[in-house]
Image (cartoon, rainbow, N blue to C red):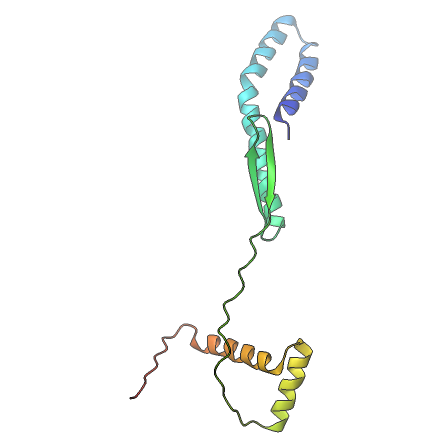
Length: 146
């Protein structure tokens, strides 16, 4: 973006109009325009900031910042969201032997295949999600007897 270009265009348009006026009015109009330039620059920057916010709202997860090369050259910089770190997965060391109905085993096998997962991975994921759901909002206490 070039603020100076926009301000120049505004000055040219106002100057064209002032040429049609009485010389005294034209002189006062030119002085008024000169006094308004800082407010116009600030309004343009506000508009650029608003554009950055609206673009960020439409780009899910992306950040849009208004940065400056110099006073008259703001830039909209789009930053990709940081990649989520890989979730911590405990090593699979423990074993549980389950007895379950043949129909449930078949259902689990079908669900794992449909998800493109191994049966073990599907069951671990299902149990992990269920364990998180059942403990949400409660204190879980485990007691060990020696």
